[in-house]
Picture 1 (cartoon, rainbow, N blue to C red):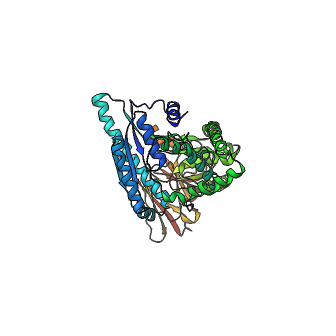
Picture 2: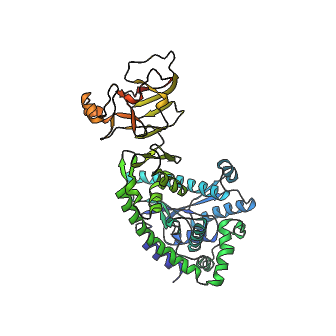
Picture 3: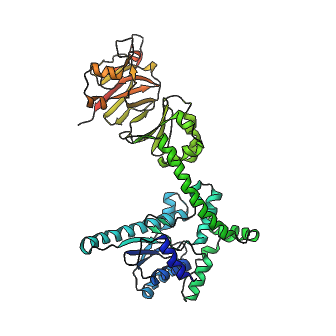
Length: 462
């Protein structure tokens, strides 16, 4: 069976919902044999498509040659050719990334813009002509690319998701040549008298992928001649194993994680019993921009002091009594907010807290429920600002006995809505202040107090 017939069969199996009658494609064309063969196969299957070519301006005359070649395909296939020129070196330098990463980011960002712009045109057609057209980006990744990706990820270090190779579909990106080996594609191009251009950088093994392609895989084939076929079979097995893996992970997460507004609350004792623990923790925290190396930090929180935490670029994982809480860093969204020493202003759901350390000499005490003074020598940071919950108790100012907040709120004749909006300021499981109502007697200022922590609550305008 020739490549064209295999392509048709693979397409029916992989993309049965995408047919020539209802699908417009954006075909990424570098000018190499893979993308040229893909263009020809798509054309012979009757698809409407547009060609997109990226000129990264990295190989001087060769880059210009590739651009001109891509433009020449307009006459052959009578399809529009879009070209984008990038200052790749400048982008890489500005973002402090490698040239390869820069090129990848630039091309996929542009492709996404093109697909979205095509979709907006399609939307208009839907309104006027009831068209079913959709736009997808087709790239020419092949079976050899898949093998190289598997090996690179394996040696670089990865979880199971890095071992299933390149996915055949990712959102609006499809890769219809993943079934075909490079030699099959070259044979097809020659049989059909296709012209293509060679990228001289593909012969240099200074790039990671080329090193695997030119050095590692040929060396392995000397010992295991069938290595490519074996690795392709492994990719399929690992893809199926990944499905089972995520089914199990989903069950663990469902049992452990309690979603409370925009936070995740996890009981420590229940989490500790999970097996395999490191894997479960990683799968929970990776969504919130944490690194795999921070798994150990999460485990240390199990036995840490109340208020201890680790942070990512977007979230904190906070130890709060018998729980670890994943909370956003943006305090106006969080329901559990850590206040570290030196912080003077904290925005939260109900308004703003302002904190300042002052000497008692000359200080004027306020009678407002929204301004409190606490004995600074009794305060140890970090503090925790959070919503109250059932079971919370404190020692109301002027009382020597503890009282549950639920009973305190009844005594204060708070409405159900007012109770729901109540927040507390806490230090190591001890409530300092029921915000806007009363401080804890244990932290009041005394004649021996030399410094105070003054906290002012400015309510959010309703």
